[in-house]
Image (tube, rainbow, N blue to C red):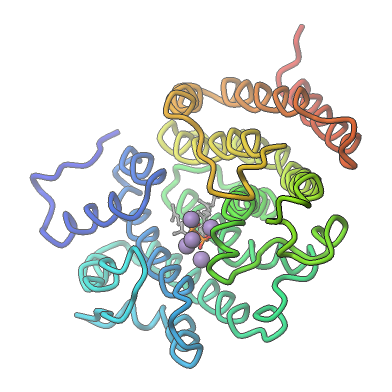
Length: 357
Ligand code: PS7
Ligand code: MN
Ligand code: MN
Ligand code: MN
Ligand code: MN
Ligand code: MN
């Protein structure tokens, strides 16, 4: 496969790659290792959604302004020269020079462009629905169903679009397009880990993504999760959230079993293995209620090595972290039994993929 060649790239494309490296910690590397056919389309897909998310996240922007920006972003991304200078967010520079993304979007194959546009329409409207929901603004997400619908809008749809790109480029198994629930699980797992990890920072920003249906089993008020005197309740609640995220793993492994090109395999596998490692780090960890936790550089390096080989080595990473979760599992935790059963089920599933003679 042939990769990036900066010497032949136009200035606008070089600028797009600069933004990719600026706005994404984890995705920038894996995207830039992608097969040439998908390298630019997926980079631009990332930047379009990062732009949309920068608008979604801006809590200083009034809803009268935010909602139409989100709902019309698929049209905005076609307006030559469009720039946005009113963001206060950390990735605002991307919006301030968004014209370079627009210029490059016009050069990609129509089939790729249409996929990106279709997902942008759906995600922008989904984000706007949640931003506008009065009950949500006041009290946060209520049910697990609402929580999963939000994860669908911001991550399940990314999976849908990426799977469409893999299949259209013939780098992915066409059968994947017939299994939308596998694709959805890939996005749900990543997004749930992000929402669990960001709980403290999001709460300080006025966002509550943990569903009441889960936290109300442990505390009376959402804010209590951050009170030292309720720490053991909060840790039980965290276990409940972790248990909920664990339910997607079998489908994620099944999806990855359908990959056939190495660069695409690496691209989908690395975020998933980083996610299981992050989940293990958060399990029973009171730091989650105080700040964002992060896996060590050393662990991240080992995970990279193991995630760029094959499904067997990826399953080994999952097995390793599931066993660590099992070890940390505490019999006094109300979710003890469920977590133990869940981890055992995933291990059994891996056995069926790779029977030990
Ligand atoms: C592979 C079938 C187009 C590669 C990759 C920008 C990360 C930002 O960062 O909490 O905490 O502030 O506001 C399925 C990526 C799902 C999405 C969602 C995997 C686009 C990505 C816009 C599907 C990534 C899940 C986090 C929405 O919200 O973020 C396969 C490419 C994947 C972007 C992610 C991100 C939302 C997000 P932060 P938030
Ligand atoms: Mn964000
Ligand atoms: Mn967001
Ligand atoms: Mn987040
Ligand atoms: Mn964050
Ligand atoms: Mn954030």
